[in-house]
Amino acid sequence: MRGRELRGELDAFLAETEQDLVAFRRDLHMHPELAFAEYRTTQRLAERLEAAGLTPSVLPRGTGIICDVGSGDGPTVALRADLDALPLQDEKDVPYRSTVPGACHACGHDVHTTILLGTSIFLAQQAAAGLLPGRVRLIFQPAEELPGGALEVMAQGGISGVDRIFGLHCDPRLDVGQLGLRAGPITSACDKLVVRVSGPGGHTARPHLTADLVFALAKILTELPAALSRRVDPRSSLSLVWGRVAAGSAANAIPDDGVAEGTIRCLDEEAWHAAPDLIKALLESVAGAYGVEAAMEYTRGVPPVVNDEVSVEMLAEAAERALGAGAVAPTPQSLGGEDFAWYLESIPGAFARLGTRSPDGAIHDIHQGTFDVDERAIGMGVRVMAATALTALWGAPLSDPMTALSNP
Image (cartoon, rainbow, N blue to C red):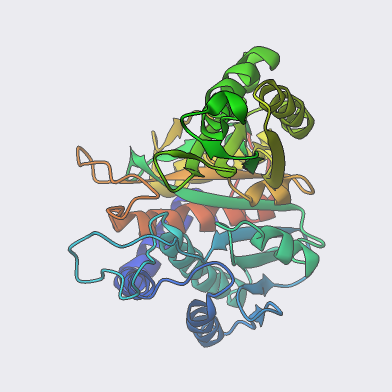
């Protein structure tokens, strides 16, 4: 199947299914489910996959699906989407607004899931016609936001025997029809830090007779990030940002405990591995200077997503064929975390950014209650994912623009 033929087949497929896919996405958007609680979403997916003639396998927790398309002869390529929503209130005034208080799809996972569903149906048709020279593993992953879902998939053998894996994420800063690509690191590591500070407490009239815990906590909040910036190569962009601080309950009483919580993000894997010990030493130094005790809870999140160069080339060539010339745009490395990184620690692959902004339209940023997409991005995503899977399966020389999707 040549590139022009593939585009024609995708055109025909989406002419029949795109509105149904949009409706499916809106249904998911109205019924968001948080990490490891995606039961309804999983059931709806399983029903649609079975209707396409596929055999989905639900993960042991009851959320998430692994499903193969095609035979075991030839290479195996995996495509991944994430299912979970965020614990945020949906603030949009749209007919498909979330019906679940305090939960909404503010990161586009409903779009990712719908795209992979559409891709699954298209690839099932290709397999039935004998046009799939290998196997595509569909990974509908739970709990990307927690994180933990990728590790759960891997523990169940989700990438066993897989040669290459691809995924994408909504990017509201790119226009619909564009695909952002980058070889090498495309996201950062992301960990969680909780600091608990304790002291004897006392009266605010006599701070010299006790340990001024609030003052000490304030010093930790400011000095710890500042010290990190001088102890780590600035090119690693090791960043500590606080998100929650709490101490005390009365204006005239020095409290005996306080807490601060934040995230550590890092672009460099070596600096990421060294961060816990460095932060612990700096914390003890600052706390000791003010006579308080400080305990640290450091929770590993995810390493950086590091894209394989060959896989990025496959994505680029597939996007040019499926979306047209000029569809690929360079994208910068982000400080956001993404558990797709765990897959790439084991097998080669690439992660892309899918444009979701209406041209010249407003940016509805992710992780906000106002987030939404131009739903034409769904069809664009199906085109990219289907073309990428076929490009990787056929394995034709990437330098030949007319044979990358050709039958041998």
